[in-house]
Length: 106
Image 1 (cartoon, rainbow, N blue to C red):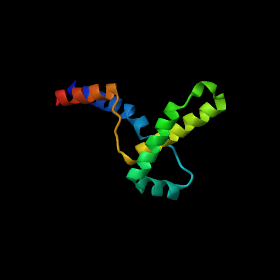
Image 2 (image 1 turned 30 degrees about the vertical axis):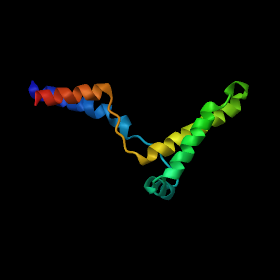
Image 3 (image 1 turned 90 degrees about the horizontal axis):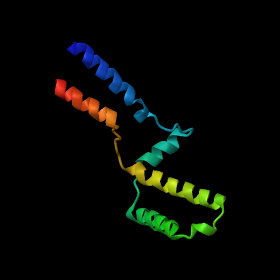
Image 4 (image 1 turned 120 degrees about the vertical axis):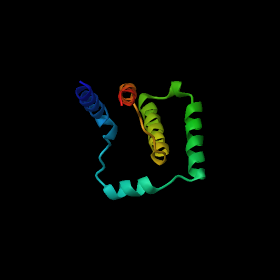
């Protein structure tokens, strides 16, 4: 019984973590490796923050839909650039519950 429960929990845990390892595939691997190793300097970070504040303070009510989409994509690019340097792990609620159950059963 205990062994069956362990394997069932292990299967659920392994299936729930599969999307966490999915990444965007890049056509140019050399470009990706140089981007991943490059760290942002303090001046670049402050420039990005200033641009985000500038976009946030804009009056968007008079803009067209295409201009709003361009601003949104620019903000998304800035966010990706800022997160590229940091390492973070996303743990879902179900995965957290399963980890706790496994720790309690062992």
